[in-house]
Image 1: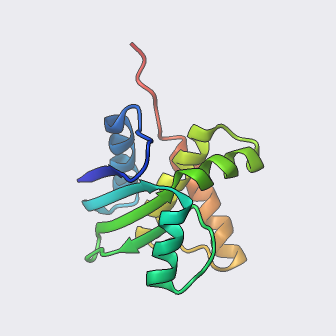
Image 2 (image 1 turned 180 degrees about the vertical axis):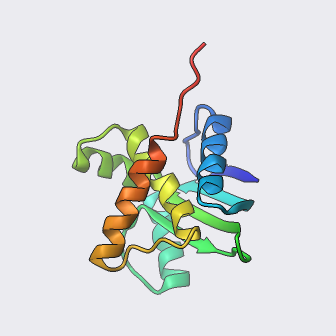
Length: 140
């Protein structure tokens, strides 16, 4: 089950659209969906998590804690909406596009993709692009 939690004045417009998409992404990687919690927050909240648990004192857009068991994905994914907004401007993309990239990035980590080396980062970007194409807005 994918759940969305909010620690700031922000809310996804259609949570079901996002959770259905992320469920499809998980299935496309031959993984099964356990409990995945997205926590939307601001920079200060995420910096505190970064310092407390990872001993880093830097701004970041996402921190994920992976509690997966075998192929069943579980975890907590913290996303700074402030960072996503600024990155969208820096990368010259829509906020929604950048948000989808960050949402799927966390799940891809749980699927085993890394982004520490240049080659790993290149594969991660390819996977993000591939999975973002799976997001479809329902038209009435």
